Length: 224
Image (cartoon, rainbow, N blue to C red; front, top):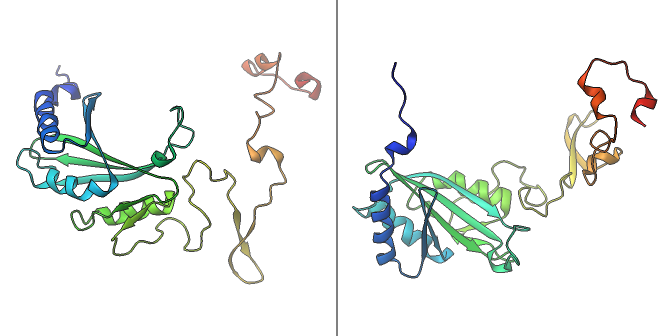
């Protein structure tokens, strides 16, 4: 009987540490850390294209494949206080197939104008990734050839993955039988529980939760 080796046995940690040391010498103004067997490069937004290009072209790195680009909203994060100039971040995940290594690049940006240069000129696959981050977080990717929404409607109000976006949204979608088309209207929440600002009736029960552990015929008084 054969067993599959644990994934950690395939990680070249000395090689990853060598890449970290190499990058620290090349970009002394950046913060480069290793945690949980992963290297993260934190840099200014303006420096993202230069760092991504170096990681792609340098022979000691060869991070030629862009796996993902995603946005992050740190509003309410357990950092006291969360600086307004670091509310948003864009995170780039890169893969070196030649070296079997992965690396992360992160750039923070302020909440009043979250913007970062586009890297579509370096990785074509960044095009849709950046559009998704723009659509969900409102992060502007300067120089993107076609920066528009990709998951929501063109006239969607707000950015749904921001922490301050209302859970119920601004409008609800319905089919207008008279107009024979999909339409929108202001959100109408006749059910108070849909606001999600308090515990549900089930979670708020006291004393009778054990009734659910066996087959029973419940009556209203059982839940009072």
